[in-house]
Length: 457
Image (tube, rainbow, N blue to C red):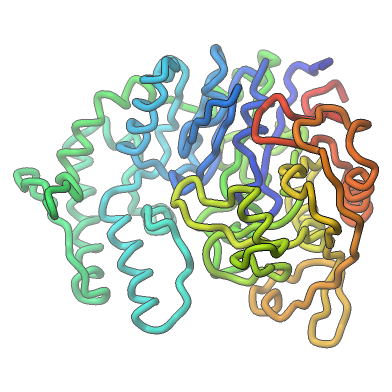
């Protein structure tokens, strides 16, 4: 690779998340100065397979597996400190040096135990009222972002001042406990630092909120940083940076299938706001899409198939693709590739090049279908609508293409079956964006590179 110094790349999910960003970020991390996570929380799940060894990450950027690469958690991330240290402990037990290379923005809002309680109580309230659940992971991400927007969040920097932290926490718990007791009819949470952990069936459900925060504060302080300044300084020195998104475009709070979305902006433009850099520092956007589509949780899904009946194409995708959520273990809904959806993703992200992942999962199907547009209320359209209500009424229009075999582990484009190349080239035609990378297994080595994102422009 003829790498250009000072070149920065953004990796985003171009569908509903779970596109394989972890593998590609890990693969692209070799030789960069730093990898930056710019949104989401520990509701993300990135699985890496390196020489057959599987590692799951939720908060720490995937570049941590490369010695010498710095990992930054930007201000756009909502941070559960206990979960961060759980993840660090897992990596350190495997011999990975984390603490000397991890930098956490002092501006990150904190996810507190009460946020998870609120999250679960709200989903239960929707179910009790007969309203479709959003499908959150129940980890408190949404309530933490609400506190951020309402300007009442506790942030990483507050952990430096126990007195200030206690004052803010007391006010926050008073507000949320009122909601829990009087609106959601759920259990409230005490601030009292003398309160013993709550036990149920011998398991600790939560520690006292203040005590837990103060226990982790001295451990986190050495990793706190002005991430914006450090990234800008690295760029001025000519270093390469990689910005890692979580979830996917159509879970974006603005551009996704609202309200069946996450609580942050997942699109490429948020890499600037969520890390504290100017948009002019973002040189290339890599959009990741599976060779088919999956979705976790509720919400419309135009190309969804029957993925639970043995012998169907959807079941093939689900089982061969091992379509289970890394974070929750929930089964992912499966369907045919949607080029009209991807066309919208290209538009809102400004995608420079595509990476098609899991091409090998479709090996063995006699034919594949590709959605090029929809019938919506009697009219033909070629791009995904913006409103979830309209998406739910879309009926996919398919092209049928011959299937293929033997793409697994292929590392050269010319070695792919012609029918598989035809499929990829049809995706390029429908979206107007070139396929620069193809992934043919979960292992980082099984990657076809047609144009490297960090290559000299």
